[in-house]
Image (cartoon, rainbow, N blue to C red; front, side, top):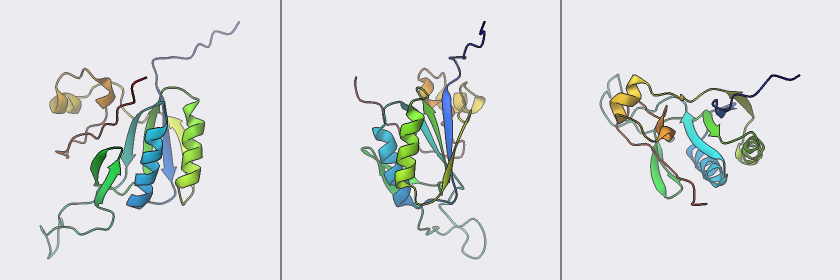
Length: 161
């Protein structure tokens, strides 16, 4: 008798780990294609932060001119890309979406990548979430807080079904 019952409370989360940091145009194309896939509930772009101002040296405090720090179009929103993206963390509704994500990644990414399954995005509120948002009613914002950022979350809500 098989007693292994999958735990449905644990969400399906994957990480797309690229072999190199991506340029903003590639990130914009990839996120736009991800937005078209039904079944992606949350997405986080991860990578090293690009400082808005030069942090040290003789030019300390002057604006940091960097080719990767620019605005990208995500759905109908204009988002400032403040990181050099090298990883994407996605939360999916079910396992079937992984194949679609892999196909889009294979088509758009100019370099190699790995898709790993694990738990990358928090599923319970932390003190930082509470400090930034208060009592959280919409669980989609869990784990989406950058304590150093004053900007809001870019949210593309699914079309009405």
